[in-house]
Length: 267
Image (tube, rainbow, N blue to C red; front, top):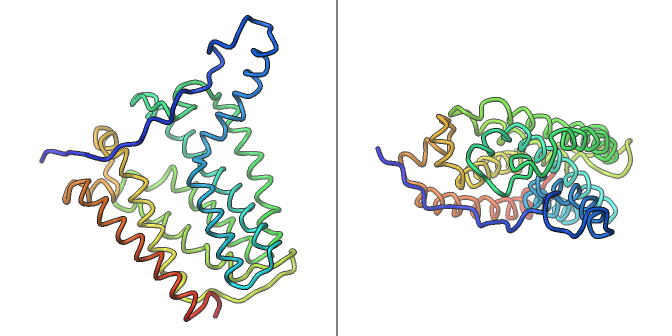
């Protein structure tokens, strides 16, 4: 059965590399470029668009649920750091495959970011996200930290199988608990999330999994992966799967908003 993919990623632009033309060795411009390259590549390896979008959405959800601005900022900061950790770990796990397939938007694969630097960033991120998460309360913090742990596990387990959606469903399904139990300070103790919000969030995680997998389906097929998005694409075709998944994602997002306005976030 022929496999045709009509979905791709845009060229992220030129990579800032240590060996780029920055002026004569020892010049101020050279030293500044070398110092700037590390942070720039770390940001690129953190899947910044996904991390920022998730942080903004969760922070806004906290505000819409009636929590004060400082708690919305805390939620957004926690999620931003947690998503960065997940992104770095994902690129570390995939760096060899990314290098084989020549993906220019992956600093670890192109050699512009050292794996040791990325692992150090992961360790620092973990040390930072723990107190940030627990700052919303022990129960809420544990829910978010478990969500991150499941996502990290998903980077190395089940991703080649038809069960690849499971870590995404569980990780996203824990996010309503992070919001509903959360407050300000370690002693904060809210209420359990509603079943409707938990189920909708889990389904949204599966939809996001499919959307993010679409650009790499051809390479995944060549590497022998058989995760859920690839299995679906082999049956329906990638363009049709993309359209259907976008429609489902929009529907789920709208359903979450409706559920928040009707049944609410908390029981």
